[in-house]
Image (cartoon, rainbow, N blue to C red; front, side):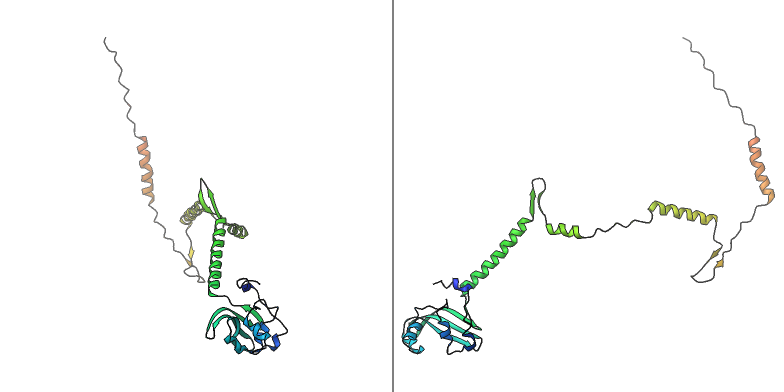
Length: 243
């Protein structure tokens, strides 16, 4: 017979009993020969063979099965226990029947062991996955190499760089030319606000100098240019040194 630990991962059901299950016959259902959870060396078999009532179990010593809890029609709990005296018993295992399917209830040690094993397995899997992304080179050292990141970068559409309409030099040159044109050809109209009628600009003309002043200014540079230039002195003659 399989051990109790191996029975934690299996279940048993007899579909012929499911519609008629009740607290009076659930122990008979549990004692079916095909049920792997049932121990045929128990006192229940002795009482059944001798056609005695279940009350005689209190007078016997050994392994027995009792109905611990019933919640009709869906849930029944059966306990396997070791009877040492009419008033002293030691629980061995509990079994619960849900909709006719029999399961063995795990003990506290098994639950803690299973949870700890699941946690350790998860941590170990995380470390294994992290180590698969780790790379090392003597000249570079350690770094992370993620394949998913490379695939995401390849899948992303490459954004085109926006081309500037003009460079800084071109904008500065155009501004200079516009200022030059504005100074040479000042505007004759200006518009205070959009939609309003343009207003002519009054251009103030500088007064022209009198003709006599202009003629006098023209004569002065002519007299300056006709003034005699003093002759330049020739360089001094070099005298021979007496030896």
